[in-house]
Amino acid sequence: MKKIFTIKNILLGILFILLDLVVYIVIGLIIMTYEDFYDKNLGPYWSLESMILTQKLAYIGFYAWWVLNIILLIFIGYKIFQRSTIKQIHD
Image (cartoon, rainbow, N blue to C red; front, side, top):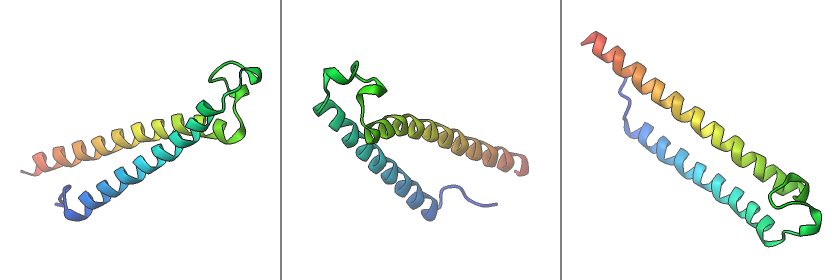
């Protein structure tokens, strides 16, 4: 029976968390440029028409990354649940 919490898995988990934080920081910095250079003449605040292409991509990417994180958490929870029930059956 494979163990879930090995040193390799813990290090991979920390690496994924750090990568996730880096992506959020980069997206946040791009979105901050929108906040700094917002112009009322381009459209309502936080509308896609008032954003340039990189800001639109960051705005949409933020929500896409958020959804991917939720899917990943559900998957990890499912795998842990699956392995714990298999372990209980075999014991």
